Image (cartoon, rainbow, N blue to C red; front, side, top):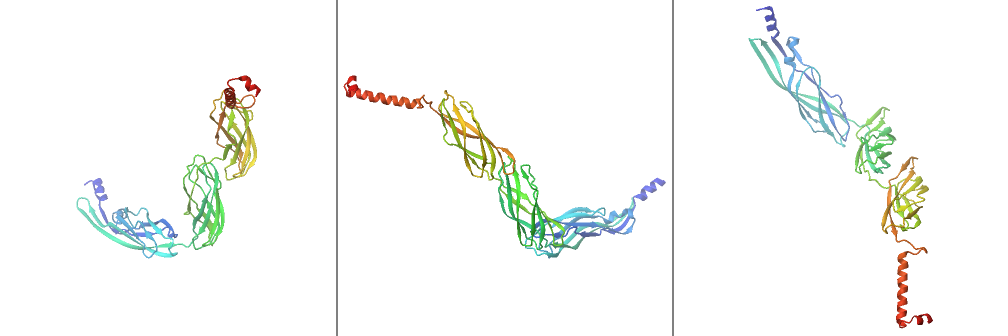
Length: 415
């Protein structure tokens, strides 16, 4: 046999005895009551080579068909996914195996033990000589472990008593109470509000709440803007809390959340004409009642009237210094109708530029109102229709008198 052939044959010979040696760790063992979380069990295979060459150790140290099971042991938790298959576990790197567990609100704080069972197959002995020997010993085993879980008594929070003034196209606020349902006091608490939506804008993303002793509550108020493109639907928001624990260390609770209503869009102003008529060919001062329908006072309210044929206006702008929420004022514009206008209802509209309570200048929507064109008036100011009715009545009286006098006109004059 050539030297090259001998080298190949020798390189294919395998001789090894050994077994996997799996250690179990928990990188993060602390959980909080009232949470559903992943409890991660970490497996590390520190396999043992009892005999043979180091280059052949993987034949006997690799665990195959690995199944990991988690049991709650004496801990007051519920394991939702208690059995997982992870395939092959070599010595190359540790493997994280997450289990979903539920920790009830009533869980008593303290340290507990969970039980972890690891089942696997492996090859304990290999004898391979090319063309002559192929001997392998297969084994299966199950190993039980105990791991620690700590149910904390740290400060943790729930959002209660939520109230919302959010409305499409307006600024509003969300108010509520932050309750410390943990067992430790929290100081310098602060809530963070960062909506994952382009239509909900946080005017303040971080709001200080103050100190919240265990079992106590503190009020919060968050200013929010809702854009005109938003939908009027209930929204769920996260409200993470940052605070200092009893040791002065900055901690956080990312679980708090709340539900808030977003109301539909409303008109900033309501308008109502006092007398919604104008005679064809006539002109008049049109009084319009304007009501502030917002929840905030407005100032420098500039109104403008918009008209189309058959209307015209020589004075179409108004000004009001201020209007409180719900307050009504009367403004006056000029309105005329062409002489050829057909008597019926026609639309006109007004909009308003105003300054809100934050000092921002805003333009309202355009609001329509119906104006009725009536019959034209005569020179004396009487409508032609009324004049014709009057003439008909006079003619009727004359005819009656003529008949009573036998058709003698002279008798009528001498009476």
